[in-house]
Image (tube, rainbow, N blue to C red; front, side, top):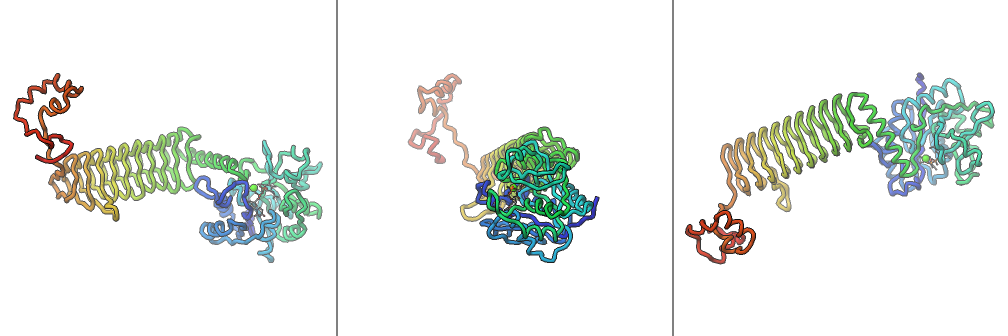
Length: 498
Ligand code: UD1
Ligand code: CA
Protein backbone atom coordinates (compact mmCIF):
# COMPACT_ATOMS: atom_id res chain seq x y z
CA UNK A 1 0.00 0.00 0.00
CA UNK A 2 0.97 3.57 -0.50
CA UNK A 3 0.79 6.68 1.55
CA UNK A 4 0.52 8.59 -1.73
CA UNK A 5 -1.70 11.29 -0.43
CA UNK A 6 -2.75 13.32 -3.47
CA UNK A 7 -1.97 17.02 -3.47
CA UNK A 8 -5.38 17.60 -4.97
CA UNK A 9 -8.46 15.80 -6.16
CA UNK A 10 -10.49 17.37 -8.97
CA UNK A 11 -14.06 16.19 -9.36
CA UNK A 12 -15.74 17.21 -12.61
CA UNK A 13 -19.41 17.92 -12.06
CA UNK A 14 -20.31 20.80 -14.35
CA UNK A 15 -21.83 18.89 -17.25
CA UNK A 16 -25.45 19.50 -18.19
CA UNK A 17 -26.46 15.91 -17.56
CA UNK A 18 -28.90 16.36 -20.42
CA UNK A 19 -29.44 12.65 -20.87
CA UNK A 20 -31.13 12.52 -17.46
CA UNK A 21 -33.89 14.88 -18.74
CA UNK A 22 -34.20 16.21 -15.22
CA UNK A 23 -34.72 19.50 -13.42
CA UNK A 24 -32.26 18.17 -10.83
CA UNK A 25 -28.52 18.25 -11.53
CA UNK A 26 -27.34 14.80 -12.57
CA UNK A 27 -24.75 14.55 -9.81
CA UNK A 28 -27.45 15.30 -7.22
CA UNK A 29 -29.63 12.37 -8.18
CA UNK A 30 -29.71 9.95 -5.29
CA UNK A 31 -29.09 6.27 -4.82
CA UNK A 32 -28.94 4.29 -1.59
CA UNK A 33 -29.14 7.32 0.65
CA UNK A 34 -26.61 9.58 -1.03
CA UNK A 35 -26.26 11.75 -4.09
CA UNK A 36 -24.01 10.54 -6.90
CA UNK A 37 -21.54 13.28 -6.05
CA UNK A 38 -21.81 12.36 -2.36
CA UNK A 39 -20.76 8.81 -3.18
CA UNK A 40 -17.74 10.13 -5.10
CA UNK A 41 -16.77 12.43 -2.23
CA UNK A 42 -17.04 9.66 0.32
CA UNK A 43 -14.72 7.43 -1.73
CA UNK A 44 -12.25 10.33 -1.98
CA UNK A 45 -12.36 11.42 1.65
CA UNK A 46 -10.15 8.67 3.14
CA UNK A 47 -7.40 9.63 0.64
CA UNK A 48 -7.05 12.83 2.67
CA UNK A 49 -6.19 15.06 -0.26
CA UNK A 50 -4.71 18.40 0.64
CA UNK A 51 -7.26 20.09 -1.61
CA UNK A 52 -10.51 18.92 -3.14
CA UNK A 53 -11.91 20.99 -5.99
CA UNK A 54 -15.31 20.39 -7.45
CA UNK A 55 -16.03 21.85 -10.86
CA UNK A 56 -19.61 23.06 -11.11
CA UNK A 57 -21.48 25.04 -13.72
CA UNK A 58 -24.57 25.42 -15.85
CA UNK A 59 -28.13 25.85 -14.64
CA UNK A 60 -27.56 23.46 -11.73
CA UNK A 61 -24.58 25.39 -10.37
CA UNK A 62 -26.26 26.97 -7.31
CA UNK A 63 -27.87 23.68 -6.36
CA UNK A 64 -24.60 21.72 -6.63
CA UNK A 65 -22.70 24.48 -4.86
CA UNK A 66 -25.14 24.39 -1.94
CA UNK A 67 -24.78 20.64 -1.73
CA UNK A 68 -20.97 20.82 -1.68
CA UNK A 69 -20.95 23.54 0.97
CA UNK A 70 -23.09 21.38 3.18
CA UNK A 71 -21.77 17.89 2.45
CA UNK A 72 -18.09 18.67 2.01
CA UNK A 73 -17.36 22.07 3.54
CA UNK A 74 -13.60 21.59 3.20
CA UNK A 75 -13.90 21.18 -0.58
CA UNK A 76 -13.71 24.19 -2.88
CA UNK A 77 -16.03 24.92 -5.73
CA UNK A 78 -14.69 26.10 -9.08
CA UNK A 79 -17.10 27.46 -11.65
CA UNK A 80 -16.76 26.38 -15.26
CA UNK A 81 -18.83 28.65 -17.50
CA UNK A 82 -19.76 27.70 -20.09
CA UNK A 83 -19.19 23.94 -19.97
CA UNK A 84 -16.96 23.11 -22.91
CA UNK A 85 -16.00 19.55 -22.13
CA UNK A 86 -14.17 17.48 -19.54
CA UNK A 87 -10.78 18.86 -20.64
CA UNK A 88 -12.01 22.40 -20.24
CA UNK A 89 -13.42 21.51 -16.82
CA UNK A 90 -10.08 20.08 -15.68
CA UNK A 91 -8.28 23.15 -17.07
CA UNK A 92 -10.62 25.46 -15.16
CA UNK A 93 -9.81 23.60 -11.94
CA UNK A 94 -6.07 23.46 -12.66
CA UNK A 95 -6.03 27.21 -13.27
CA UNK A 96 -7.44 27.69 -9.79
CA UNK A 97 -4.33 25.91 -8.43
CA UNK A 98 -1.51 27.55 -10.42
CA UNK A 99 1.22 26.59 -7.98
CA UNK A 100 0.12 23.03 -7.40
CA UNK A 101 2.84 20.39 -7.44
CA UNK A 102 2.69 16.64 -7.03
CA UNK A 103 -0.13 14.23 -7.77
CA UNK A 104 -3.59 15.27 -8.87
CA UNK A 105 -6.35 12.72 -8.92
CA UNK A 106 -9.07 13.59 -11.45
CA UNK A 107 -12.44 11.91 -11.55
CA UNK A 108 -16.03 12.52 -12.59
CA UNK A 109 -18.97 13.37 -10.37
CA UNK A 110 -21.21 10.85 -12.14
CA UNK A 111 -19.27 7.66 -11.33
CA UNK A 112 -20.62 6.79 -7.88
CA UNK A 113 -19.38 3.23 -7.45
CA UNK A 114 -15.63 3.64 -7.10
CA UNK A 115 -14.17 2.36 -3.87
CA UNK A 116 -11.36 4.05 -2.01
CA UNK A 117 -9.28 0.89 -2.51
CA UNK A 118 -9.42 1.27 -6.29
CA UNK A 119 -8.47 4.94 -6.16
CA UNK A 120 -5.60 4.05 -3.83
CA UNK A 121 -4.40 1.42 -6.31
CA UNK A 122 -4.26 4.06 -9.05
CA UNK A 123 -2.27 6.41 -6.84
CA UNK A 124 0.09 3.59 -5.85
CA UNK A 125 0.77 2.65 -9.48
CA UNK A 126 1.27 6.30 -10.34
CA UNK A 127 3.84 6.72 -7.60
CA UNK A 128 5.59 3.48 -8.45
CA UNK A 129 5.91 4.23 -12.19
CA UNK A 130 6.67 7.94 -11.70
CA UNK A 131 4.40 8.45 -14.71
CA UNK A 132 3.10 11.77 -15.98
CA UNK A 133 -0.33 10.17 -16.03
CA UNK A 134 -1.83 6.93 -14.78
CA UNK A 135 -5.22 6.06 -16.17
CA UNK A 136 -7.72 3.64 -14.65
CA UNK A 137 -9.30 1.51 -17.35
CA UNK A 138 -11.85 -1.31 -17.26
CA UNK A 139 -12.66 -4.20 -19.51
CA UNK A 140 -16.40 -4.20 -20.03
CA UNK A 141 -18.62 -6.89 -21.47
CA UNK A 142 -20.56 -4.15 -23.26
CA UNK A 143 -18.47 -1.00 -23.63
CA UNK A 144 -21.50 1.07 -24.79
CA UNK A 145 -20.56 4.70 -25.33
CA UNK A 146 -17.54 4.85 -23.07
CA UNK A 147 -14.27 6.13 -24.50
CA UNK A 148 -12.15 3.29 -25.88
CA UNK A 149 -8.53 2.83 -24.80
CA UNK A 150 -6.07 2.33 -27.64
CA UNK A 151 -2.77 0.52 -27.10
CA UNK A 152 0.24 -0.10 -29.32
CA UNK A 153 1.66 -3.49 -30.28
CA UNK A 154 3.61 -3.59 -27.00
CA UNK A 155 0.48 -2.96 -25.00
CA UNK A 156 1.33 0.62 -24.03
CA UNK A 157 -1.57 3.02 -23.88
CA UNK A 158 -1.59 5.38 -26.85
CA UNK A 159 -4.77 7.30 -26.19
CA UNK A 160 -8.54 7.30 -25.73
CA UNK A 161 -11.03 7.66 -28.52
CA UNK A 162 -14.58 8.66 -27.74
CA UNK A 163 -17.23 6.31 -29.04
CA UNK A 164 -18.67 9.01 -31.30
CA UNK A 165 -15.28 9.64 -32.85
CA UNK A 166 -14.25 5.99 -33.06
CA UNK A 167 -13.91 3.87 -36.17
CA UNK A 168 -15.87 0.63 -36.38
CA UNK A 169 -12.73 -1.27 -35.51
CA UNK A 170 -12.06 0.93 -32.47
CA UNK A 171 -15.63 0.42 -31.30
CA UNK A 172 -14.86 -3.29 -30.97
CA UNK A 173 -12.34 -2.48 -28.22
CA UNK A 174 -13.83 -3.34 -24.85
CA UNK A 175 -11.24 -1.65 -22.64
CA UNK A 176 -12.67 1.70 -21.65
CA UNK A 177 -11.59 4.91 -20.00
CA UNK A 178 -13.16 5.17 -16.53
CA UNK A 179 -12.55 8.89 -16.08
CA UNK A 180 -10.21 8.28 -13.13
CA UNK A 181 -6.65 9.49 -13.64
CA UNK A 182 -3.65 10.38 -11.52
CA UNK A 183 -1.55 13.14 -13.05
CA UNK A 184 1.62 14.93 -12.27
CA UNK A 185 0.32 18.47 -11.79
CA UNK A 186 2.82 20.15 -14.10
CA UNK A 187 2.34 17.58 -16.86
CA UNK A 188 -1.43 17.95 -16.59
CA UNK A 189 -1.26 21.74 -16.83
CA UNK A 190 1.02 21.59 -19.85
CA UNK A 191 -1.07 19.11 -21.77
CA UNK A 192 -4.41 20.74 -20.93
CA UNK A 193 -3.05 23.88 -22.59
CA UNK A 194 -2.74 21.97 -25.86
CA UNK A 195 -6.33 20.70 -26.06
CA UNK A 196 -8.55 21.56 -29.03
CA UNK A 197 -12.26 20.97 -29.56
CA UNK A 198 -11.83 19.26 -32.92
CA UNK A 199 -14.14 16.30 -32.44
CA UNK A 200 -17.73 15.18 -32.87
CA UNK A 201 -18.94 17.14 -29.83
CA UNK A 202 -16.84 20.27 -30.42
CA UNK A 203 -15.60 19.94 -26.85
CA UNK A 204 -12.22 19.83 -25.17
CA UNK A 205 -11.79 16.23 -24.13
CA UNK A 206 -9.79 15.42 -21.04
CA UNK A 207 -9.16 12.03 -22.64
CA UNK A 208 -7.06 13.75 -25.32
CA UNK A 209 -4.50 14.60 -22.65
CA UNK A 210 -3.42 10.96 -22.73
CA UNK A 211 -2.48 10.96 -26.42
CA UNK A 212 -0.88 14.39 -25.92
CA UNK A 213 1.38 13.08 -23.16
CA UNK A 214 2.25 9.97 -25.17
CA UNK A 215 3.18 12.21 -28.12
CA UNK A 216 5.50 14.22 -25.88
CA UNK A 217 7.18 10.96 -24.80
CA UNK A 218 5.95 11.27 -21.23
CA UNK A 219 5.37 8.08 -19.27
CA UNK A 220 1.71 7.09 -19.29
CA UNK A 221 0.78 4.17 -17.06
CA UNK A 222 -2.50 2.38 -16.61
CA UNK A 223 -4.34 0.20 -14.12
CA UNK A 224 -7.13 -2.13 -15.17
CA UNK A 225 -9.95 -2.16 -12.61
CA UNK A 226 -10.49 -5.50 -10.87
CA UNK A 227 -14.24 -5.13 -11.17
CA UNK A 228 -15.65 -3.22 -14.14
CA UNK A 229 -18.94 -2.71 -12.28
CA UNK A 230 -17.21 -0.24 -10.02
CA UNK A 231 -16.42 1.97 -12.97
CA UNK A 232 -19.94 2.45 -14.33
CA UNK A 233 -20.96 6.01 -15.00
CA UNK A 234 -24.45 7.43 -14.78
CA UNK A 235 -25.57 9.37 -17.83
CA UNK A 236 -29.25 8.45 -17.90
CA UNK A 237 -31.97 6.98 -15.69
CA UNK A 238 -31.37 3.41 -16.83
CA UNK A 239 -27.71 3.67 -15.82
CA UNK A 240 -28.82 5.21 -12.53
CA UNK A 241 -31.00 2.15 -11.86
CA UNK A 242 -28.11 -0.17 -12.75
CA UNK A 243 -25.72 1.69 -10.47
CA UNK A 244 -28.27 1.67 -7.66
CA UNK A 245 -28.68 -2.10 -7.93
CA UNK A 246 -24.94 -2.59 -7.76
CA UNK A 247 -24.65 -0.34 -4.72
CA UNK A 248 -27.59 -2.14 -3.11
CA UNK A 249 -25.94 -5.53 -3.73
CA UNK A 250 -22.76 -4.23 -2.15
CA UNK A 251 -24.51 -2.90 0.96
CA UNK A 252 -26.65 -6.02 1.41
CA UNK A 253 -23.60 -8.28 0.94
CA UNK A 254 -21.77 -6.25 3.57
CA UNK A 255 -24.53 -6.73 6.15
CA UNK A 256 -24.90 -10.42 5.38
CA UNK A 257 -21.18 -10.76 6.03
CA UNK A 258 -21.81 -9.01 9.35
CA UNK A 259 -24.34 -11.64 10.41
CA UNK A 260 -27.65 -10.37 9.06
CA UNK A 261 -30.10 -12.80 7.44
CA UNK A 262 -31.60 -11.38 4.26
CA UNK A 263 -34.21 -13.76 2.94
CA UNK A 264 -34.49 -12.09 -0.46
CA UNK A 265 -31.56 -9.81 -1.32
CA UNK A 266 -33.15 -8.91 -4.66
CA UNK A 267 -36.07 -7.15 -3.00
CA UNK A 268 -34.21 -5.72 -0.03
CA UNK A 269 -32.98 -2.14 -0.35
CA UNK A 270 -31.06 -0.02 2.05
CA UNK A 271 -29.02 3.11 2.23
CA UNK A 272 -25.41 3.60 3.19
CA UNK A 273 -26.29 5.08 6.59
CA UNK A 274 -28.34 2.15 7.85
CA UNK A 275 -26.85 0.18 10.77
CA UNK A 276 -27.72 -3.43 11.51
CA UNK A 277 -26.66 -5.75 14.30
CA UNK A 278 -25.87 -9.46 13.99
CA UNK A 279 -28.86 -11.82 13.92
CA UNK A 280 -31.21 -9.29 12.48
CA UNK A 281 -33.56 -10.88 9.93
CA UNK A 282 -34.88 -8.92 6.98
CA UNK A 283 -37.69 -10.46 4.96
CA UNK A 284 -38.56 -9.67 1.38
CA UNK A 285 -39.62 -6.25 0.13
CA UNK A 286 -37.95 -4.40 2.95
CA UNK A 287 -36.57 -0.93 2.42
CA UNK A 288 -34.40 0.74 5.03
CA UNK A 289 -33.67 4.41 4.57
CA UNK A 290 -31.84 7.22 6.31
CA UNK A 291 -30.23 6.51 9.67
CA UNK A 292 -32.33 3.45 10.42
CA UNK A 293 -30.87 1.15 13.09
CA UNK A 294 -32.02 -2.41 13.71
CA UNK A 295 -30.84 -4.21 16.78
CA UNK A 296 -29.91 -7.83 17.27
CA UNK A 297 -32.61 -10.46 16.94
CA UNK A 298 -35.19 -8.11 15.42
CA UNK A 299 -37.22 -9.35 12.45
CA UNK A 300 -38.31 -6.78 9.89
CA UNK A 301 -40.55 -7.55 6.91
CA UNK A 302 -41.95 -8.69 4.71
CA UNK A 303 -43.10 -5.46 3.09
CA UNK A 304 -41.69 -2.80 5.39
CA UNK A 305 -40.38 0.66 4.66
CA UNK A 306 -38.43 2.15 7.54
CA UNK A 307 -36.90 5.61 7.44
CA UNK A 308 -34.81 7.04 10.29
CA UNK A 309 -36.31 4.39 12.54
CA UNK A 310 -34.76 2.44 15.41
CA UNK A 311 -35.97 -1.11 15.94
CA UNK A 312 -35.04 -2.59 19.32
CA UNK A 313 -33.57 -6.01 19.99
CA UNK A 314 -35.88 -8.93 19.17
CA UNK A 315 -38.70 -6.66 18.07
CA UNK A 316 -40.81 -7.55 15.02
CA UNK A 317 -42.16 -5.26 12.33
CA UNK A 318 -44.42 -6.66 9.63
CA UNK A 319 -45.88 -4.91 6.54
CA UNK A 320 -45.56 -1.44 7.99
CA UNK A 321 -44.35 2.05 7.13
CA UNK A 322 -42.32 3.81 9.80
CA UNK A 323 -40.72 7.24 9.70
CA UNK A 324 -38.73 8.71 12.57
CA UNK A 325 -40.02 6.07 14.99
CA UNK A 326 -38.37 4.26 17.87
CA UNK A 327 -39.57 0.72 18.51
CA UNK A 328 -38.53 -0.84 21.81
CA UNK A 329 -36.98 -4.23 22.45
CA UNK A 330 -39.39 -7.17 22.07
CA UNK A 331 -42.11 -4.86 20.78
CA UNK A 332 -44.26 -5.74 17.80
CA UNK A 333 -45.61 -3.58 15.01
CA UNK A 334 -48.03 -4.37 12.20
CA UNK A 335 -49.22 -5.68 9.94
CA UNK A 336 -50.40 -2.55 8.11
CA UNK A 337 -49.42 0.19 10.48
CA UNK A 338 -48.06 3.68 9.92
CA UNK A 339 -45.66 5.03 12.52
CA UNK A 340 -44.96 8.69 11.97
CA UNK A 341 -42.22 10.90 13.44
CA UNK A 342 -42.06 11.08 17.20
CA UNK A 343 -43.51 7.64 17.78
CA UNK A 344 -41.80 5.82 20.65
CA UNK A 345 -43.03 2.38 21.50
CA UNK A 346 -41.72 0.95 24.77
CA UNK A 347 -40.23 -2.48 25.37
CA UNK A 348 -42.68 -5.31 24.78
CA UNK A 349 -45.33 -2.91 23.51
CA UNK A 350 -47.62 -3.59 20.59
CA UNK A 351 -48.88 -1.48 17.74
CA UNK A 352 -51.13 -3.84 15.86
CA UNK A 353 -53.00 -3.76 12.60
CA UNK A 354 -54.19 -0.54 10.93
CA UNK A 355 -52.86 1.80 13.56
CA UNK A 356 -51.44 5.27 12.87
CA UNK A 357 -49.27 7.01 15.42
CA UNK A 358 -47.57 10.40 15.53
CA UNK A 359 -45.74 12.20 18.38
CA UNK A 360 -46.83 9.32 20.50
CA UNK A 361 -44.93 7.98 23.45
CA UNK A 362 -46.33 4.56 24.23
CA UNK A 363 -45.06 2.87 27.40
CA UNK A 364 -43.61 -0.57 27.80
CA UNK A 365 -46.03 -3.52 27.53
CA UNK A 366 -48.77 -1.18 26.38
CA UNK A 367 -50.95 -2.49 23.58
CA UNK A 368 -52.61 -0.56 20.80
CA UNK A 369 -53.77 -3.59 18.90
CA UNK A 370 -56.23 -2.48 16.21
CA UNK A 371 -57.59 0.32 14.03
CA UNK A 372 -56.49 3.26 16.14
CA UNK A 373 -55.08 6.76 15.71
CA UNK A 374 -52.70 7.94 18.41
CA UNK A 375 -51.58 11.51 17.80
CA UNK A 376 -49.85 13.83 20.28
CA UNK A 377 -50.11 11.49 23.22
CA UNK A 378 -48.21 10.06 26.15
CA UNK A 379 -49.40 6.65 27.24
CA UNK A 380 -47.93 4.94 30.29
CA UNK A 381 -46.90 1.32 30.71
CA UNK A 382 -49.22 -1.70 30.67
CA UNK A 383 -52.14 0.23 29.23
CA UNK A 384 -54.60 -1.12 26.71
CA UNK A 385 -56.10 1.01 23.99
CA UNK A 386 -59.16 -0.70 22.53
CA UNK A 387 -59.90 -1.14 18.87
CA UNK A 388 -61.03 1.92 16.99
CA UNK A 389 -59.88 4.47 19.54
CA UNK A 390 -59.07 7.93 18.23
CA UNK A 391 -56.91 10.42 20.04
CA UNK A 392 -58.76 13.46 18.76
CA UNK A 393 -55.81 15.83 18.76
CA UNK A 394 -56.84 18.52 16.31
CA UNK A 395 -59.57 21.08 16.87
CA UNK A 396 -59.30 22.50 13.38
CA UNK A 397 -56.75 25.12 14.42
CA UNK A 398 -54.38 23.69 17.02
CA UNK A 399 -53.05 20.31 18.08
CA UNK A 400 -53.55 19.20 21.68
CA UNK A 401 -51.97 16.55 23.86
CA UNK A 402 -53.54 13.63 25.69
CA UNK A 403 -51.98 11.72 28.56
CA UNK A 404 -53.04 8.22 29.52
CA UNK A 405 -51.66 6.77 32.76
CA UNK A 406 -50.09 3.40 33.49
CA UNK A 407 -52.36 0.36 33.23
CA UNK A 408 -55.29 2.45 32.01
CA UNK A 409 -57.91 0.66 29.94
CA UNK A 410 -59.54 2.54 27.11
CA UNK A 411 -62.58 0.71 25.75
CA UNK A 412 -63.01 0.22 22.04
CA UNK A 413 -64.42 2.92 19.83
CA UNK A 414 -63.59 5.80 22.15
CA UNK A 415 -62.83 9.36 21.10
CA UNK A 416 -60.38 10.96 23.50
CA UNK A 417 -60.91 14.64 22.82
CA UNK A 418 -57.65 16.45 23.61
CA UNK A 419 -56.36 18.06 25.71
CA UNK A 420 -57.29 15.22 28.04
CA UNK A 421 -55.90 13.27 30.91
CA UNK A 422 -56.84 9.70 31.72
CA UNK A 423 -55.34 8.74 35.08
CA UNK A 424 -53.38 5.68 36.07
CA UNK A 425 -55.52 2.57 36.21
CA UNK A 426 -58.56 4.49 34.92
CA UNK A 427 -61.10 2.95 32.60
CA UNK A 428 -62.94 4.48 29.69
CA UNK A 429 -66.16 2.73 28.74
CA UNK A 430 -66.31 1.46 25.18
CA UNK A 431 -67.83 3.90 22.74
CA UNK A 432 -67.17 6.97 24.86
CA UNK A 433 -66.60 10.47 23.62
CA UNK A 434 -64.29 11.57 26.41
CA UNK A 435 -64.55 15.32 26.89
CA UNK A 436 -63.66 15.43 30.58
CA UNK A 437 -60.57 14.12 32.34
CA UNK A 438 -60.89 10.71 33.99
CA UNK A 439 -59.01 10.57 37.31
CA UNK A 440 -56.90 7.61 38.41
CA UNK A 441 -58.99 4.58 39.23
CA UNK A 442 -62.24 6.08 37.86
CA UNK A 443 -64.28 4.99 34.90
CA UNK A 444 -65.36 7.58 32.34
CA UNK A 445 -68.57 6.76 30.51
CA UNK A 446 -69.15 9.28 27.79
CA UNK A 447 -72.04 7.90 25.80
CA UNK A 448 -75.81 8.09 25.51
CA UNK A 449 -77.74 5.50 27.46
CA UNK A 450 -79.13 2.77 25.21
CA UNK A 451 -82.86 2.63 24.58
CA UNK A 452 -84.44 -0.65 23.42
CA UNK A 453 -87.86 -0.69 21.79
CA UNK A 454 -89.30 -4.17 21.83
CA UNK A 455 -91.07 -5.41 18.71
CA UNK A 456 -90.08 -2.34 16.70
CA UNK A 457 -88.97 -4.36 13.69
CA UNK A 458 -92.16 -6.37 13.59
CA UNK A 459 -94.21 -3.17 13.57
CA UNK A 460 -92.07 -0.89 11.42
CA UNK A 461 -90.32 -3.33 9.11
CA UNK A 462 -93.06 -5.84 8.55
CA UNK A 463 -92.50 -8.08 5.57
CA UNK A 464 -88.69 -7.78 5.64
CA UNK A 465 -86.24 -10.62 6.17
CA UNK A 466 -85.40 -9.06 9.51
CA UNK A 467 -89.02 -9.18 10.62
CA UNK A 468 -89.25 -12.77 9.43
CA UNK A 469 -86.13 -13.74 11.38
CA UNK A 470 -87.37 -11.88 14.45
CA UNK A 471 -90.69 -13.66 14.29
CA UNK A 472 -88.94 -17.04 13.95
CA UNK A 473 -86.92 -16.14 17.04
CA UNK A 474 -90.17 -15.58 18.96
CA UNK A 475 -90.04 -11.78 18.99
CA UNK A 476 -93.83 -11.59 18.78
CA UNK A 477 -93.97 -12.63 22.41
CA UNK A 478 -91.96 -9.58 23.45
CA UNK A 479 -94.60 -7.26 22.02
CA UNK A 480 -96.89 -8.02 24.94
CA UNK A 481 -94.66 -6.08 27.28
CA UNK A 482 -95.75 -2.48 27.66
CA UNK A 483 -94.53 -0.65 24.61
CA UNK A 484 -93.52 3.00 24.62
CA UNK A 485 -95.90 5.44 22.99
CA UNK A 486 -95.76 5.20 19.22
CA UNK A 487 -94.81 8.53 17.88
CA UNK A 488 -92.63 10.07 15.21
CA UNK A 489 -89.65 9.73 17.58
CA UNK A 490 -90.21 6.01 17.55
CA UNK A 491 -87.48 5.70 14.93
CA UNK A 492 -84.23 5.26 16.86
CA UNK A 493 -82.31 6.85 14.04
CA UNK A 494 -83.78 10.18 15.11
CA UNK A 495 -81.79 9.62 18.21
CA UNK A 496 -83.58 11.55 20.99
CA UNK A 497 -83.44 10.22 24.53
CA UNK A 498 -86.81 9.31 26.07
C1 UD1 B 1 -16.52 10.57 -20.24
C2 UD1 B 1 -15.23 10.33 -21.04
C3 UD1 B 1 -15.25 8.90 -21.54
C4 UD1 B 1 -15.33 7.95 -20.38
C5 UD1 B 1 -16.51 8.27 -19.48
C6 UD1 B 1 -16.39 7.49 -18.18
C7 UD1 B 1 -14.50 12.42 -22.03
C8 UD1 B 1 -14.47 13.26 -23.23
N1 UD1 B 1 -15.17 11.27 -22.11
O1 UD1 B 1 -17.61 10.41 -21.11
O2 UD1 B 1 -14.07 8.64 -22.28
O3 UD1 B 1 -15.42 6.62 -20.87
O4 UD1 B 1 -16.56 9.67 -19.14
O5 UD1 B 1 -17.50 7.66 -17.38
O6 UD1 B 1 -13.91 12.77 -21.03
N2 UD1 B 1 -18.21 17.64 -17.08
C9 UD1 B 1 -17.83 18.90 -16.68
N3 UD1 B 1 -17.74 19.88 -17.61
C10 UD1 B 1 -17.98 19.66 -18.93
C11 UD1 B 1 -18.36 18.37 -19.34
C12 UD1 B 1 -18.45 17.37 -18.39
O7 UD1 B 1 -17.59 19.15 -15.50
O8 UD1 B 1 -17.87 20.61 -19.71
C13 UD1 B 1 -18.34 16.59 -16.06
C14 UD1 B 1 -19.73 16.01 -16.00
O9 UD1 B 1 -20.52 16.70 -15.04
C15 UD1 B 1 -19.49 14.56 -15.64
C16 UD1 B 1 -18.08 14.29 -16.15
O10 UD1 B 1 -17.49 15.54 -16.41
O11 UD1 B 1 -19.54 14.38 -14.24
C17 UD1 B 1 -18.09 13.43 -17.41
O12 UD1 B 1 -18.86 14.07 -18.42
P1 UD1 B 1 -19.87 13.26 -19.32
O13 UD1 B 1 -20.50 14.18 -20.27
O14 UD1 B 1 -20.73 12.43 -18.49
O15 UD1 B 1 -18.85 12.34 -20.13
P2 UD1 B 1 -19.11 10.90 -20.73
O16 UD1 B 1 -19.86 11.04 -21.99
O17 UD1 B 1 -19.67 10.01 -19.72
CA1 CA C 1 -20.58 10.28 -17.75
